[in-house]
Amino acid sequence: MKTRPGTTHGRPESDRISTMKKKLKPLTQRPAWKALAAHYQSIKKLHLRKLFADDPKRGERLTASTSGLFLDYSKNRITDKTLQLLVKLANESGLRARIDAMFSGEKINITENRAVLHVALRAPKNAPIIVDGKNVVPDVHAVLTKLSGFAQRVRSGEWKGFTGKRIKNIVNVGIGGSDLGPVMAYEALRHYSDRSLTFRFVSNVDGIDFVEATQDLDPAETLFIISSKTFTTLETMTNADSARAWLLKGLGGDVKAVAKHFVAVSTNAEKVSAFGIDTANMFGFWDWVGGRYSMDSAIGLSTMLAIGPDNFHALLAGFHEMDEHFRTTPFEKNLPVLLGLLTIWNTDFLGAETVAVLPYEQYLKRFPAYLQQLTMESNGKHVTLDGKKVNYQTGPVYWGEPGTNGQHSFYQLIHQGTRLIPCDFIAFGQALTPLGRHHDILMANVFAQAEALAFGKTAQEVKAEGTAAALVPHRVFEGNRPSNTILARKLTPEVLGKLVALYEHSVFTQGIIWNIDSFDQWGVELGKVLAQRIVPELESPACPPLKHDSSTNHLIHHYRNLKGNL
Ligand code: G6Q
Image 1 (spheres, rainbow, N blue to C red):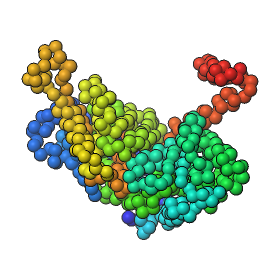
Image 2: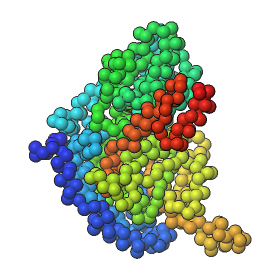
Image 3: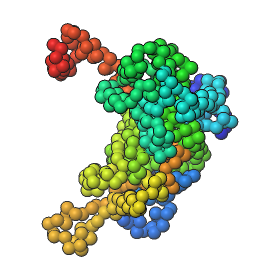
Image 4: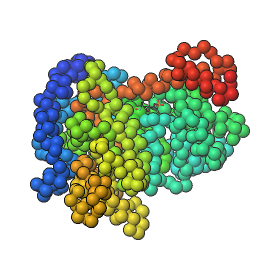
C-alpha cells in the first residue's frame, strides 16, 4: 500500500475535498445518470426470462470473484449496457479518487472533520497510513498485541477474578457499533469459540437485558467488557453502573474487585478512569474508527476472547484482502463496487425501497441486524456533502432473516407482493458441522428461491398444471425479481472478514455516488440528547412543569400515573 500523507501539497484536506466537490456535477446532471434514466425507459419491460434465454452464458458471465468469495449478479434486471453506464457513473462520481482519499487517511468524514480509516485496523505492519502527519499503523498493532496478551491470559486461566477463581463468563456491555459487531461476530464464529467460556451481550437500557444476561452467572467468574467509544452513552453507562453494583453485591462490596472484573474498550481514558477502571486495563481505538466500522478494532475484544488471537488475526487478514481487492481492482470486476452500483440501480431506477439480506447459514443469524446499522446509519442521509437536499433516493432499508425460516413467512411478499425487493442470498459450500442431508437441502432452497424469484411461473404454466381457472391468477408468479447470490466454501474467520468488508465498501461506493457523508450519524446523536432531557421529568418526585407538545406532556403524565408516582 502506498503512503499518502494526510495533507496534500500543503493544503488542508477540507480545501482539497471542497475542490473535489466543486468539480462534480450534481448527481442527476451527470451524463451517466441521465443516460441511465433513458436506458431504464428502454429496458424496464425486459424480463429476466428473456435476458437469460437470449444469452445462454449470462449466468456464467455476470459473476465476479475474489479470493474465495463468489458473486453471481446475473439475476439482476440489467444488460451489459446497464453495467457500462453504472461503471461510467462511478467514474463520473470520482469513485477512484475517493477510494484513494479514504485509504490515505484524508478527512473524508467532513461533518465531523475526521479521517475514515477502518482499513488501517487491518493493515499489515509494513503499510504506513498517515493521519495528521503520524503513521497510525504501529498504534493499531500495539493495541492488537495488548489485546492478544490479555485474551491469552483470560483464555489460559492466568487472569483470575478477585476471589482467585478463573474467569468463565464474559459480558460485553455496549450498544450500537459497540454491540452489534461483537454479537454478530460471536454468533458467526461460534464454531471456532472456546466452549468453556460463556459470552453474553448487554446493550438495551431496558434492565431486563442485564438481568437476563447475568441471572445465572457467578460474579466471581465474570468479566465485564465496557465497550464505548465515548464512554458517555447513557445506555452503556447505566448498564455499566448496574454491572458494578451486581458485582460488588456478589463479592462482598470491596471496590478493589472492580479492577479484576472490569476492562474497558474506549477512546476516552479520562472517563474510563473516572468510572473506576484502571487504564492499564483499557484498550484504545481512535476517532477515525466509526462505531459501525469498529468490530475489528479493540471493540472486537469479546470476539478475540471467544475465538483466540490467531483466529482474530485471520479475520483481519480477510478484511484486508477485501480492502485490497476494493482498492486495486477495476470497477467491472470489483465485488463491492458491483454490489454498490447494483443497489444504486435497484434503488434509484427500479424504485426498490429495501434490500433483503438472506443468509443460508444459521451462524449468520445476526448478520442482517449488523448490516442494518452498517448500511442505514451510513447512508440514511438526506443532504449532499455541501448540505443540499438530495433529489433522489439514498440508502434503502436493509432487513432479513436466515434461510430457510424466512421462506415460511415474509418470502410470500417478495414472490407475489406489489413491491420490488432485491435480495442478497449468502451461502456456503460446506456446513461447519455436517449433519446428514441437511446442507444439500439448505442449498437446494437457496438456489430454488433465487430461481423462482427471477423466472416466476406464467399463467400458461399454471394452467398446464391443471389448476382451476379461478385459481390461476393467485398461483401466477410474475418473476423478474432481482437477486444476488454470494457463495464461499465455508464460513471461516477470514471469510467473515471478507464478507463484512464487502458490504462496508459497497456502502462506501453508494455513499460516494449519492454524494453524502456515509460516516456521520447526527440522527444517533440526537437520540442521545433527547432522552436525557426527559429523564428528570420522569424521575423527580413531583412532576415539574412540562414544556413539550400536548401529546408528549400527556404521555409523561400518563406514565407517571401508571408507575404510581403522581
Ligand atoms: C455507530 C454509531 C453508534 C455508536 C453507539 C455507541 O457508528 O456512532 O451506533 O456506536 O451510539 O456509542 P459509544 O461506543 O460511544 O458508546
